[in-house]
Image 1: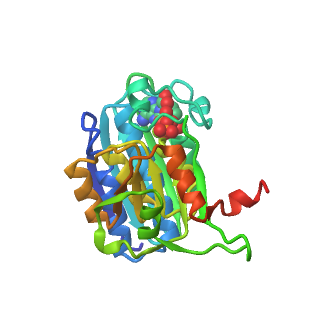
Image 2 (image 1 turned 90 degrees about the horizontal axis):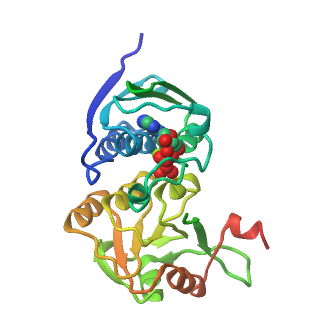
Length: 140
Length: 139
Ligand SMILES: Nc1ncnc2c1ncn2[C@@H]1O[C@H](COP(=O)(O)OP(=O)(O)OP(=O)(O)O)[C@@H](O)[C@H]1O
Ligand SMILES: [Mg+2]
């Protein structure tokens, strides 16, 4: 029954220069709350990879971060094309990113594996043509 | 695909890693500072060279300098997410004012050099940087 804090961010799918602003803000807030550096780093990497994916693979969306006793929950919901094969998408090195996305420094196929590696749990709900929701937890 | 090269300053005689300042790293690559001049005397222990940001995020340990030929705001964001202290742009890439402001806010030093990636990493290596645990795995 402990208090929890919730933050919401709208992610603009058209604005590549600004993507990451939500992650930057979350990191700042966690720092202010005095969470352990290791927890902050894990959350930062996971949410940043997720935020990037929302822009390069979907058309933006909404991020909700809930911080409660011992847990940071991140929900990243987009209305993008969905993921046809989640298992494949989770494979290190697998990417459908275009040449133009690669030229921006993304498309190594490491984002989802990183999100899995740095969080305690990751759950992906996806429907083709409807969208994708990624839910991650980092415990501390 | 760019592979992350992880460097850390290494003393051959003693086998221990030793810190160098960002200023020393800058001089080693004949570089200049674009932002964060007040922080040039910060100590750094290691560096990472890559043009793929997820690669950097995948192999992060405690690298302090990101050496890259990629020039967009996501380079600064990536460095910020993992608490890197410095970004070194190679091939004379010129970051925009927005990028420099982002770096300023994050407290990240921005350097640039005319050298390409390979030579930049090579010069840092010659200045005393070696691979840390990753380097020793192969020697
Ligand atoms: N939100 C999403 N909507 C639709 N497809 C997605 C989404 N997130 C990931 N994918 C698909 O899963 C693949 C793998 O994603 P992952 O983040 O691991 O790699 P990447 O984004 O292609 O490259 P990197 O993350 O290394 O820059 C993507 O190439 C894309 O096909
Ligand atoms: Mg990705």
